[in-house]
Image (cartoon, rainbow, N blue to C red; front, side, top):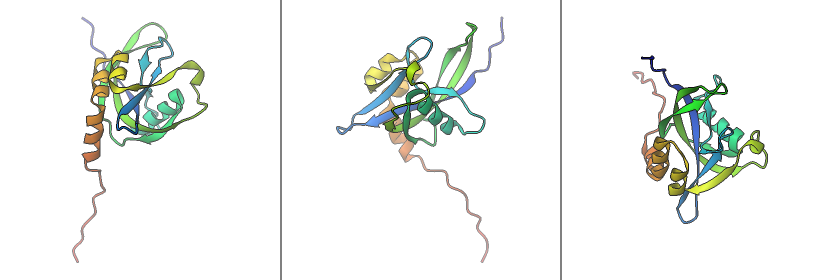
Length: 160
């Protein structure tokens, strides 16, 4: 029996926008190899934190600009297909990205399609069950993220 490989960690942005009627839409992009609907993701840049890496992926893959969450709202697992045909298990940390605009031009524009989906429709479009569940629960996840106390620097108290 082979030894299970430790999952490689990737960072992803879950791009969303709020509509005037309070509905939430999610932007999905197509993968370059199979054309299936995914969210922007990739390997963490050693010079960036995970949320900054996720934000960079959203800009490169979908031309998306917005406000990235400081903390992940969840994670999911999938198998990444490599150019040689093999695959590697990946665990993806997902950060919410509130999209402010989409650029007219971005690095992978000619390699991918982008589309806004309602939550239920987006959940049905992705293949990863854990990601689909996260998309269906996005409204609750965003509310929970807003109520989490922000990390603050501890102040040193000195005697008077």
